[in-house]
Image (cartoon, rainbow, N blue to C red; front, top):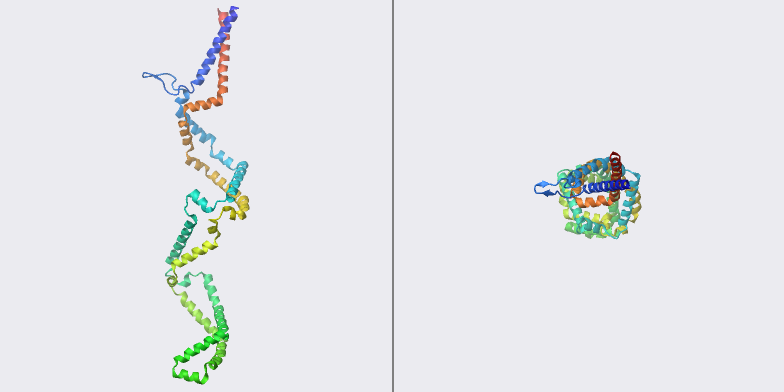
Length: 379
């Protein structure tokens, strides 16, 4: 009976010592949080292991995350995986549809998201500025060049070939004018003014022939003159000569005849009225985006996701280096309090730590049992 009590006592003592030792070792991983001193003498094993090695742990974690966990190769494979691409397509399509079907206008988006005040007015001012710069640059570069030099070759050739057409058009319009009653009346007034300027001779001609009779005689001859091939060739030659003279003039001649402000205002107004985007700025997105939904969602979104994934995968290593991810992890771990770290680890591994304590007690009990047997045999 005494032997059983002795062995049981040794087992209990060994179990208590083994369990307490393991429990103390677990607690010493974190505690004490700070260094303890008695006078100038530092108490051994203070602070705990993790607080003592906090900075080293932070550095090693940063190194491990960058070189073994979040690697460019691993992230690149994830970016190009079918599941990720599908998820990105679905997410971006849903967000795009939500935006396109909203009641917000482009102007409101620019104002709220980018801080652009009065977006449409700003856009028109930017357009005016761009047109003005283009206007000034064009005449600065071409002011002293001949008109024929700055005109495109096709335009030069087209105008040259159009001279006979223009001559024929002018003669046709002249015939139509003077063959009408209105034209005859104008011709009569021209004859009146002509004879009036000739003094006595004009009065004599007017008195003997009469104005209407002179008009009746002159009108058919004028019509014959306009229909004559020689007249057409003459008009063509005049137009060709004048066009040749004009082509030799400097572009500055055209600049002098133009009003810069009127040109800029005209072009800006024309763009505002004829380019849809200027109207879309003040309209809800849902009012005008419907025709573009299918194209954007089915064609543009997959292409955009694919292009962005390729671009990111291609430059991922450089991006990670620029992010200094290792330093970010190190700084975050260093800023993480030991108390919070202990709470986090114990929350995750509390059950395992208990099992380690129990295992220490079990091993201690087994060692006590063996020691008891040895003492009995030796004693």
